Amino acid sequence: MLKDNKVEIVVDGVTGVGKSSLVKIICEEMQLKPFSEMFEDENRLLHKFFYDREKWAFAMQTNFLTNRFKQYQQAMKVGRAVMDRSIYSDRIFALMYLKHGYLGAEEYAVYNNLLHTLLEHVNPPTLMVYLQVSTDEAIRRIHRRGRPDEVEVEREYWDMLNQFYEKNYRDFDLGQLLVLKVDRLDYVHKPEDRRYIMGEIRQAINNVSRSASAL
Image 1 (cartoon, rainbow, N blue to C red):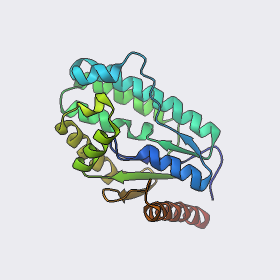
Image 2 (cartoon, rainbow, N blue to C red):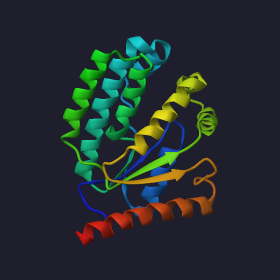
Image 3 (cartoon, rainbow, N blue to C red):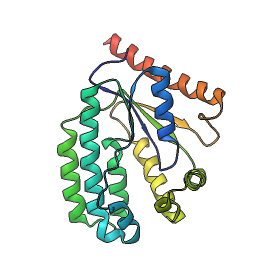
Image 4 (cartoon, rainbow, N blue to C red):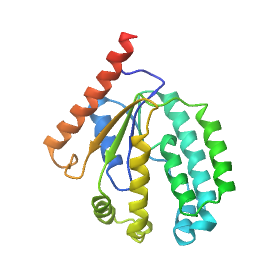
């Protein structure tokens, strides 16, 4: 059973994996309300970051964090929401930037303090869906989409990000997690893939409902 005033599903995964397309399908199939990834970047911080990562990482990631927090709160108020990324994956990027020197230790400490403060004011989704994909397939989809800031990024960056995503969801313990391997799935154009992926999502949601009823 789906509840009002709660984020039901968050779809997550590396850039280009197909999150937005799946959000649209879930909303069509389950009558949920879509929340696309918020991208308020009036100062072009993402563009600046890709050309000078050490200088712009902190400002960019803090901006994304606060935007994701505001959007998640809005999704909770609206209820019956399905989101493309969320505040719960923001830390993946910050940890990667720390490890590779784009964020200093002091900057990460400030970021992490803000993150934990914001997380006290939201609740995890009913279901987290992680779309798992190989780096090569993610890059192929990124190039097919053709956004200039993404196409110009080196393979090493996307491979690092994919590794940090994998680690994050190996350690995920905030609720129900559904991992879907999507390298060979085309749920946008192939009805059988759409049926398969929606069947997995419905089953996971039903498992959560049964577990809650048993308590």
